[in-house]
Amino acid sequence: MTDHLTLFAPAKINLHLDILKRRADGFHDLATVFQALRWGDELKIRTIDGERDELKVTGPFAGDVPHDESNLVLRIVDRARVELNIDQRVSIDLRKKVPVQAGLGGGSSDAAAALIGFAELSGISAEDHRLVDIAAEVGSDCAFFIRGGTQEGWSRGEELAELPLRHEFGIVVVVPKVKISTREAFESLTPGDLGLQSDVDGLKNWLAAPETRFLPDVHNTFLAPLCKRHPEIANALDELKELGAQWSQLSGTGSACFGIFPDLKTAEKAASEYSLPAQILQACEPWLAGVTFHA
Image (cartoon, rainbow, N blue to C red; front, side):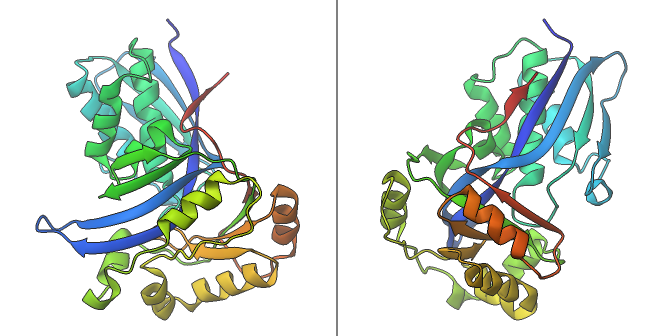
């Protein structure tokens, strides 16, 4: 059994995000389609002797990541230690390439990678059904990254169903120089913003049909209220459309915008011509898996 592992933790976008209603427990019922991206963070994990786990964060967005017990990576390892009855301590090196508070799921993906790596180092397969349950307890998006790919999500986002993806497309992700916390995003909503539903069947058909030109009517509930607070978002989406995006949208509850292009080549060309200020500008393709091991 190895004592160290390297894992790829993909970012994600929400191809649509409908906030349907506020629940009695304070959370919201939602409907969404997650899409993993062939771009993300890298996490190295190894076993150590000691009484505490260790976390080191490097990379362009390391300064935005908490290093204490509020970090999802440390929280999920602690949770897994209890749920899986494991005593082992670990050291984690996280290379942070995905900006935080952007709606790209970076923290949730990093947590899923830590969970899978921690379990594997302890002789527990990544296929163990308990990992999905642990991930869902720690964060609504964490469970998605265990399997990744393309998945429909509902309830708080932890109820998931895999979707077929046969449609080739490229993606440009732009994160304007704006940080939006999940709390701010939800506080921006009014009762009148809730309940509008995307054409999910149309989106599923678009994903499953290799050559369809039909564009689904999809949206993100947070788009209008966040554009009012942060016009940089609207400007980014407009520029993506001007550069040839078939459609563009906000991802999750953050500031990340994305444009859908016919293929990776046209996405890369659009990214090279993008001119507005941004924290990150990335052309990529869909990733058909979730967290994966690297050699």
